Length: 150
Length: 273
Image 1: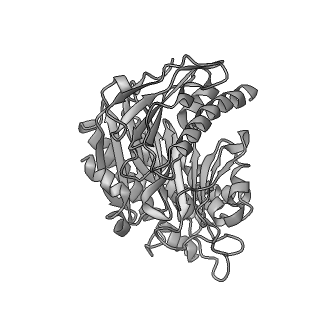
Image 2 (image 1 turned 90 degrees about the vertical axis):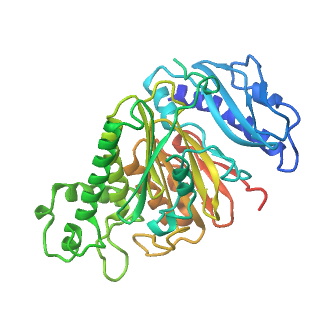
Image 3 (image 1 turned 180 degrees about the vertical axis):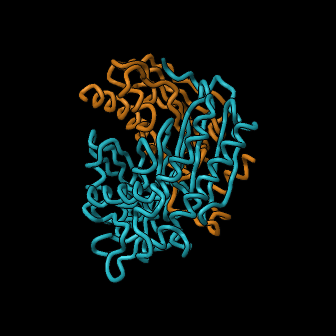
């Protein structure tokens, strides 16, 4: 249990840094350079290889954080940045090995609150929301996603 | 073995299907080996057929369903298909674990039997089985906003689930990455105030929606409904639930992320409102 807690804390530190970054780049302030915070993750230090790919600061691009070597394996996250806002976060690497780690990887990844993200720009596969009836579905976000993939 | 970096792989194509079942949209996303072939179609047909069967047994909108007849006292539990007893047992466990907030018998006057709150998650978990059995295929099956995620495709990035903002249904308030697990959300945003406290009958006012992430949809759904019914106590109760994570969106716009018993929730103000 202690291992798990510590692992979570290391993950949390990654997320907290992302949140801090989120907070520091408001909707009106375009991102000028990759955030240093992203590469400083985890208790085990980081290889600090932040880099950006894609176009200018106004366009959508991805920022890959450095690989943080935690006690239980590497953790690496990637941000999608659009117009200076974080519109997506994916975990590129995460520790695995024992069953509890696998459980964490399965469904206990960080919940990323993105108050400033409009649904159109967030890269999502499905929407969870209060029960949609068949009538309400037509104008729902999920309906738009379903139409895009048929 | 760590997941391969998604940025260097071609994204897997997603094939989506939608069917209206039990009065709600059931959406399926598949990707990987059996995303769009005959086995996928057969598994989807099987999933939809299972949901229609469940509807015939459990629907409170159908006067001839087993549950409607049970509610009117025309038949006993022993007369019904065995799933009815299974679901009622689940409902009783949910009632005890939620201190009566979750109750399939309505509070106040009639005490009518309405197990829909436990049937949905339970049914969709079962309906996902033939799809998961496809193998080497990612599955995301959603019934009216409650969903099961499975990752089976080699090199899969997993699924990214957006949590609908109950105050602006065109936006998401959070994103949850899930590889294998379930996400359920309860709230009044779309159907109005259809959930009330099982014991007191009080309709929530402080909380706008509760999302629960758990290993299986049966309990994600039950916990989301129970926590929502608890209104102001939603966060306190969710923190006690082992293996659950979640998001509480309050009526005043604040959000709380629940990390389960392992970690305390972090309260963050919502900006820009």
